[in-house]
Length: 97
Image 1 (tube, rainbow, N blue to C red):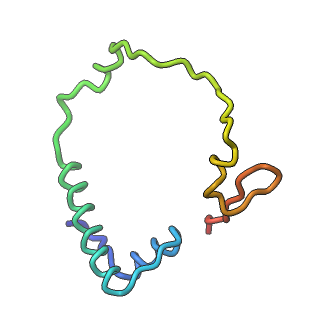
Image 2 (image 1 turned 135 degrees about the vertical axis):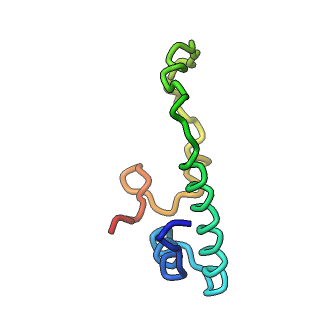
Image 3 (image 1 turned 180 degrees about the horizontal axis):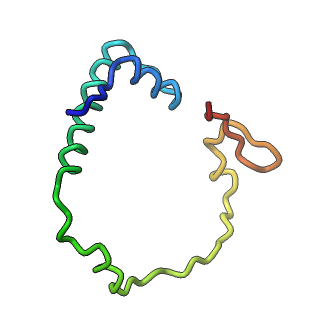
């Protein structure tokens, strides 16, 4: 396990940024789950990939669909879950600290 640990305060900070609310018990449970997830990443990070040629997949012929813009006709349905509109655009709250 790494030197950094996910504690309840870290979970509460993340939840504040994501506008989620957790009880202390939920935050404690999530802290443990985050620790487990980070542990998995540490395990993956230890895998030796030195014999893997990352350029091997450059030769693959990938077919892409054409990116064709389409007009969405049912604007009412499109905007049914939008909390705030300004000048026809979706307005979202500022979340950067």
